[in-house]
Length: 106
Image 1 (tube, rainbow, N blue to C red):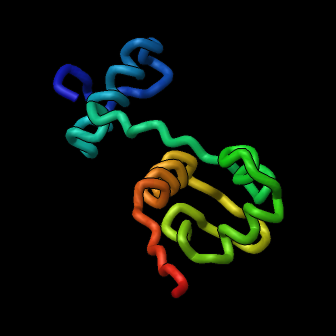
Image 2 (cartoon, helix red, strand yellow):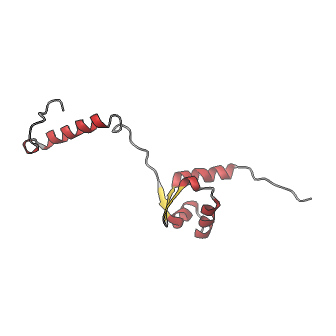
Image 3 (cartoon, helix red, strand yellow):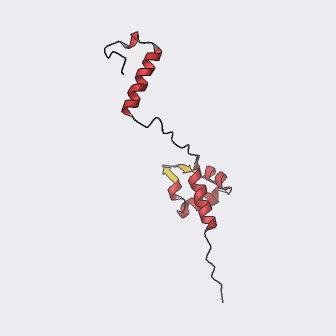
């Protein structure tokens, strides 16, 4: 707040002056945080959302959740499932590229 008197009343400031003062104070308190824009994350909710994302039934989605393979992408709060869609697709891609073990029967 370089050009503002700290003893001036808020009612005496114009809207522009008030916004400038607030912006300067926020920048001083949180340096660098205003320049970094967080990456937008895509979330789906519930087994229905997971099933739609993976193109499978709700039963299969429940089975995949119970397997534990997607635990790092799924957060459960009570009955609510919050699923990081990008992480689920990344895990599914890794699982798809993983070679399957084949044990021939003699």
